[in-house]
Image 1 (cartoon, rainbow, N blue to C red):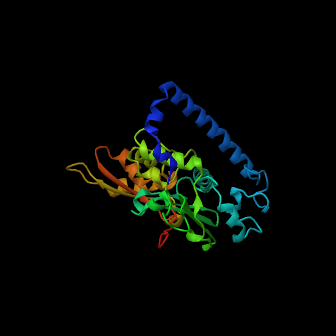
Image 2 (cartoon, one colour):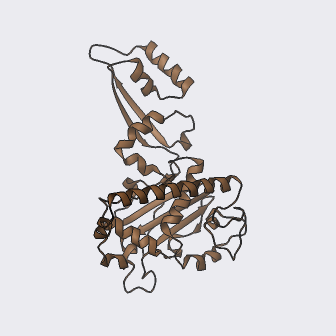
Image 3 (cartoon, one colour):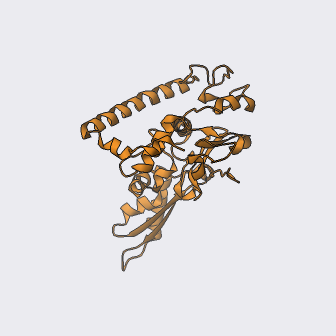
Length: 298
């Protein structure tokens, strides 16, 4: 069981003044920015920002997050001892998110709540180069499996694929949460109305489920012919103002501008035909990785 369940974390939050909270948030944001810049600089130079070794190097005596990028020489057996101890769920989650977003922002991270199983506390799938990682946390995993010889402590499950072949299976390991993880989880459980857990520089497709973001996404979109790797599908229905029709000439003009500027036709028609009723439907594109599911949770 999570030991922080016995503590009143809402009272803990209330013990801080507004000024203290604002200062902590500001310092946290500044710290995140510094670490992220360090991550990008090292990655560009082929180095791991955590251990300082080359990303392509595997050293058995130096367990590190970059082992999950499948460096030459890494084997499944080396993960057993590494994952028997807490490595920090929220830390490795951020690491996967940062890597995924260096290739394709948002679209390489499927953390859609709509695709998360009802029996799960959390499910996320990430893609980076030829690698796919996926987390699965059932509601019973959060508490630990009582009277069980395996997974009795609060834990989570991880799957890793390389070239579409499973390298680490979900049920290979019951990875224990760190103390920091357990505090964060219980803080959110007790005070989700007071606490926001964000993914600095690691936003995924769940951002798309926030209606406040839809207009921002729509304005920033450009069209592509590479449908297989597209992050979003955009469908637009255009209805001319009452008593008017949409001429073929206007549609052709919009098509030509769209081809030239890469802007969606619907956005162009919205400008060219004032008063038209335009309805846009956005949905995840074919380039978003499918959510990997854990069967037979235990």
